[in-house]
Image (cartoon, rainbow, N blue to C red; front, side, top):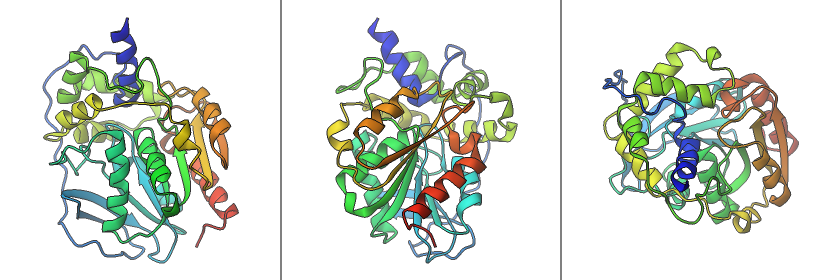
Length: 318
């Protein structure tokens, strides 16, 4: 049935596999917010701030030398910038790491203009770069963030020095392609309430070894999802989500591209990596045995070292 196919692709990005029919009310844990400030370059010490970007207030975290190459990182659907903590620790000695909560996620929260469609998310990457006065950057992304990253790069290739894509969205899946699909009620309830049992079921699908995920990380993910307005924003995102044939745009990515993929990824099949490799003009693929959908969290040190080596090989290092 088409509904089953639709649910499959929605779960790909909503990470709501298994147990979505269970729900219960649950309050988000309090998260401290920081002051909104101007978009000025930072020093090597980590700085978190809120920056006004094209009518939205975006949470941004920066660390690393101000004069180092910029590595801009975009997280996946339902997640927040904390997903990149490991890479920031590993790479901030040689790169200026910048990451932000996507619109409708984390402490950024809902977008007053509801710019949640994939094309709008891609365009917003450029708005963030403009606000931070970044003419160009290395751009990385995971899942939905990877989709936004490469679509931006296809629009503005001159602003992208290289790409690091961790299991990115790209190809049509499970009947979702040119047109958006209805969001099943059970999935809407999950995104609006985030019951603990369903959250843990989603963790079990995202990570190859869910037992290795620290409890505080699970609670952090849930707290960010439960923040006021985020659930409705995520539902709106899915209502506007499409996966048209990407190959015409992928061929525009002439910059170096590094693809990282977990061989045990249950969310976006590793076979998609081979399809991307067949189309991208200048790409390298590294796969990781026993790793799921978030390689940067599950195999942090090795994947960060792979990123550093790839960028160094292309002359992109401090």
